[in-house]
Image (cartoon, rainbow, N blue to C red; front, top):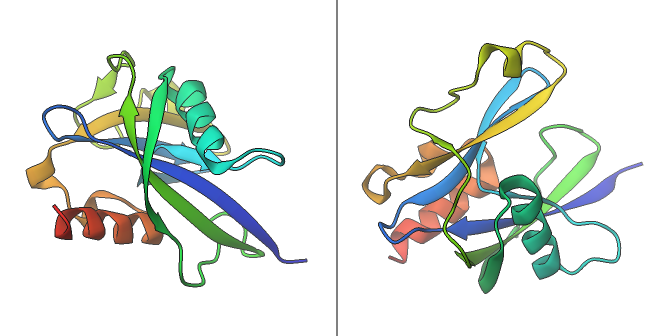
Length: 152
């Protein structure tokens, strides 16, 4: 049975106009994506994004303007029976970002990626000048990055 998988992501730019991304290791694969995650039953999209930022980064955010919602068919990278629908918002940190960040993509400790069935994530800032659709892995994130760069 095919299902819809609704995901909510945040575009967080700091004072220096760097974009926050997560480098993730998921079941043997490496992805760079925008922070966020899955909508839970009974939850609104803005509340989902606030929860995801708190769970993943320990960061309270204010959810701003809606930036984009998937407007084409996209199959899930993790389950070929799920159609992905992603909703993107701008977000503003309500406190300084305290999580450690990495400088290089996929800068994991060996123990973080030792289990090929495991998952882990690290945060990283991308300089605005270096930001392009090639900075992220997922097709819908690429569209959002292009929109950001085009509309800036």
